[in-house]
Length: 550
Image 1: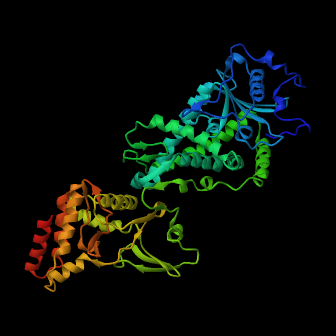
Image 2: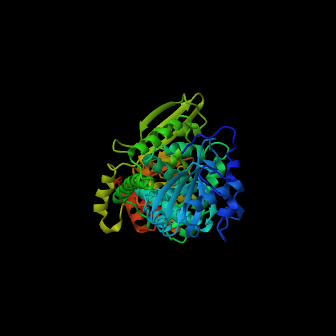
Image 3: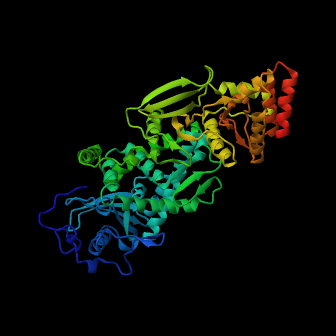
């Protein structure tokens, strides 16, 4: 809350609490015996720089001891504008006071004294419940998402912060798994994502909070404030790092197993939880201040007024998913940004031209796109993994019965093609380079490999128009290499292979998996090749060449 102050007084000097109209006694008389101030928590071997002066810290501890019996105080911390570095001259000091067995549960107290403070007093067990399971709708614990400064009880506060951030990480990972399915395993999820997506959700519940978030993460202290918050997420990740479905390093978290699996129900439950927490937050706010809707309105209008003065929102706060990374290729935010993104990667400006043609037959879901600007030209293949195409795999799955299980999910097929494109190149097999992915739209963008399909080469050989079986041998050797590397393709038709510059490129990998039946790959290639054959001797030669090379 903002208060008008008498002119000519320095806000930091007021920390030296002398006699006031509220009757504050000198600090040395108010400080409880054996109750010491804490240094800022040491994290990753580096002590954090204090934002409050010693006098301010002492004054705020005094305020806590005035409001609560000193021996019941479990922890005190400052947060908000003063600690984040964007306080105005009329800003209060925001303080959380954690109290053992506080009968009031959670309570606001405003002091207009030598140290104008807005104190949020909360019962310790309630705060523990808020960290573990949002017992208060994260009304109190949510303030520890951002930078705060412990005055006493730093160990307790750090423990609760990390416990809360562990839950945030888990909830965010389940949401990504729900939205992206198996493709979530291809994402590197930086710690910034967990912070900013959670802040975005909190702002959806209480939009005026955007003012505070924008101020906290912009300006001269923005990077330091971010680093403080991220250290808590790194500590939280350390505690959950033993889980087999996660891979964790200093910069990001990866989902490494299908054991973490989301679905439509999980997504609906997440939305319901967010709504419930929002309602609980407002209820707790009203209870804590013993105020009605009029006060809510007044506070909201005050913050909305200040929002007009706020700096531009950090991009991470507007679009947290722009922080997600891929090992290979760019991550496009949506389908509409694909062409712009590719053009930018190709060094083109906004005036580029676009030409589209269908790739394959009318049922194909891929298109060849040419982007051009002046002398620059880039040709790409844009593949949309739709539910319509799943019908093809469903029918083939019925025909194949137990011999091969095909994936029908668009996201699963997208994941398989993206993952296989990378892994097969590591095995020494040629595949088109991945340029980018728009997972929300189920779109994969790859370089367009211009050349002749292997099916056409085989057709000439079967007709007796050619006797060159070199590329059949090359394809068999590539499949053998893939099988030795622990992969199977699932769709080995010759039409999926392009010959360019004397090399074979494998282009359709949406059913490729680690493991699987190698015999299916061989049988499918021979079956579809035989359908092209009119002469038994031609097919016999193709089969012999393929099997001998394999």
